[in-house]
Length: 123
Image 1 (tube, rainbow, N blue to C red):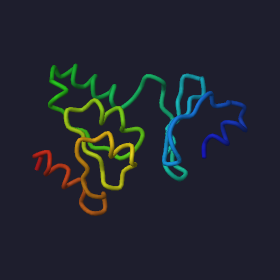
Image 2: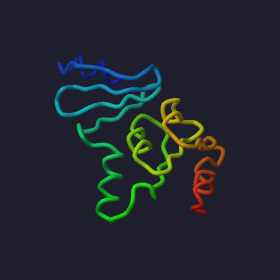
Image 3: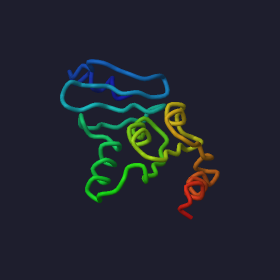
Image 4: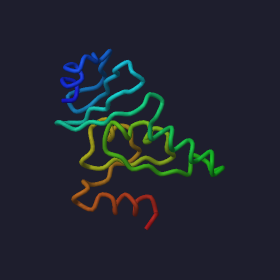
């Protein structure tokens, strides 16, 4: 996991949240790490999220967040799933993503995205 490299380089994580399936790490340097299941992970600037991005786009367009649809599968998608009017988790997503969504589609390799789009009346 990325924690070990950060510790070797002298940046000690201040706190870690989540489960064995994923979570977040704050380095105290204005960056947080999102740790996925296995060996995946991401670095994200504090205050930046897909949910914040969704809110900015909605405000810029003068739209209503209730009219938005989000599809996600992991920790980096949780703020977006919480912010969207309709939230759909992939069947292969994390338990946290599935719990945050208003509907769960099938796995990505079982046409989950197409089914999500059909459920949301996009196709």
